[in-house]
Image (cartoon, rainbow, N blue to C red; front, side, top):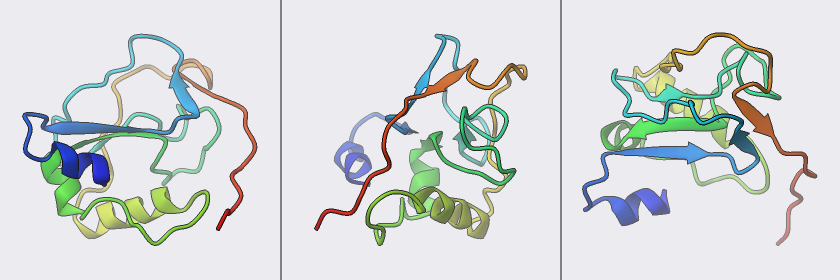
Length: 126
């Protein structure tokens, strides 16, 4: 949310939100402007290297400035690891932007397009 606010008055018209632990395994991942009315989900089930439930939304996503503002950004009432992606899916559904666009890439073995870096889950620090 903070980065989008900082860039609001600039020429940037779309934003890629990228989990730091899910990195591209090849250069042909399509980081381009969302052509439709819904955001682009680069790592849906079947492409994300770890998560595979059908209505998953998260990992690596692309929003236009208008789409991000329409859903009022990411929820900020979370502490620790997780649930912000599920909350964004609900925001998209409530604003008529579900299902998201998905990349026009052929199905390949899990881990072909993105690699999930191994790490310990975060713990709450207050």
